[in-house]
Length: 227
Image (cartoon, rainbow, N blue to C red; front, side, top):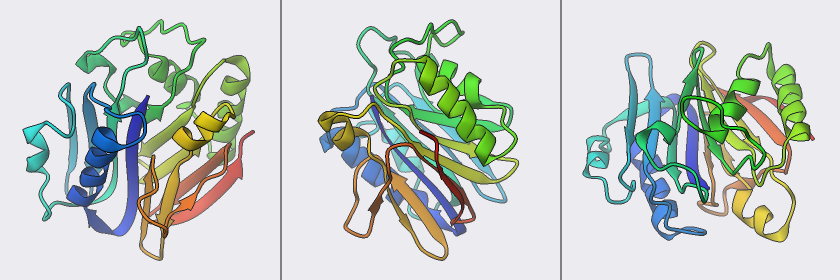
């Protein structure tokens, strides 16, 4: 289980503000602490950063490298709480990478075989949906995988660096606990899109279970229900 954040912006956002709330969720949020490591992918037109650490995000001094003056247009931050019985090493830290895409997941694919170099249900999920033609094809791949598996949550944040797009999926097996824990919350205006595992303020809207959103330069360009 995890806490995560993603953003897409036309002008750029200070990465420190995204990290700060992810730290808060990991340390004080629902079912905290999420203390089995963290990872980040962030980019703008000039550079791309990728960083992973086995330390809790709220205790890692390397977080201070991402100052208020560091501005990016696209990114994902992920704080991990490993599901029972799963490994706790840097290999399992999100985001994962396949073919120009970066992927972070919240939930457990209970029926996953984890027959990959990471021993990861997340990576198996990613492998099954990563090669898609468009948003609707991605939605169909998510649906197909969901129908074949038992899961608590299939939430994900995915960056396609070629399209410079952020994909956000909110999908979980419905229960009172899962509705509270897995619902994603987002803010969107003319320039910025920000999504968190927990509601930052009343300005944030809650996603529907089964909702998939594609965002480019801070604007929602596709939206559909996969299940």
